[in-house]
Length: 161
Image (tube, rainbow, N blue to C red; front, side):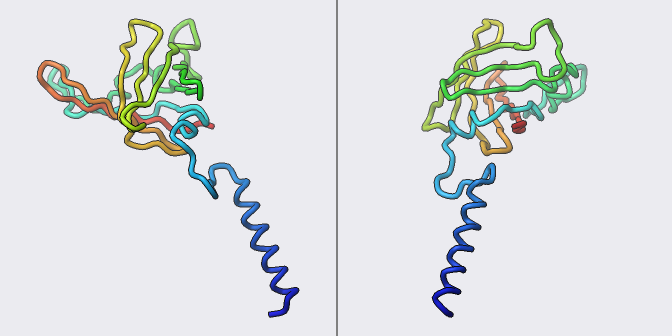
């Protein structure tokens, strides 16, 4: 191969790498941090399950999202790098205000958990375990005990930005 052909091949490879590095969501050198993934956009509430199911009038319920009003099924969470968050009504508004609540967040357990502290006292502060966090999806696990029964809620959010 001639020197000129090698040079053109190197320019071609460099061009391909440069173009792919500019595409959204492609991490060529350094993978994003959990903070970057969490705060890069907003998160649309898309699924919410509980195990074991809750029995209501003889019916076992495991899909908690379907039990919510239609206007609650499109709620949005947004996190900032300054460790605040906003819980937003989304497109369909239930109440008078677009913003349901605001609060602060902090990582715990080597960034495997996230603790949310709400400003409104009717919303209980809660700690979640990350099951999944990437550019497209955020899945949070909440484990708790009620009346001697251990429950696990799984809440899924899809990226909307």
